[in-house]
Image (cartoon, rainbow, N blue to C red; front, top):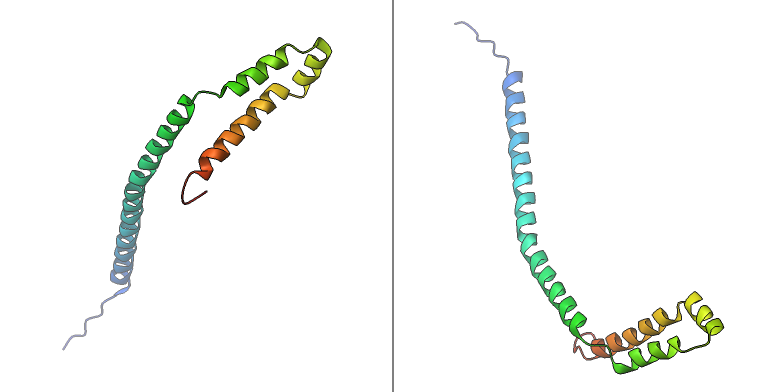
Length: 112
């Protein structure tokens, strides 16, 4: 009876390469699936944030802010120079805006 001598090394390498290709395919597929599934919540969050920006932007400034800024315009020139140097009008606007945002955040049940 004749003995057959087979070299199985190329077949083993082919099976290993096939396994690596299948593993890479599934890894890429699950990455794609994760990206698709995360796209929807990101878009919903984006729409919510855009809506909040629109709502907050449409809130008119309280009359106290405009009166404070107009009062700063009537100051003497040397005082006006220092107030502009230290960005006092922007600071007052920032402080009043922070108070308004703090007031709104305190009205949110879970956060405030």
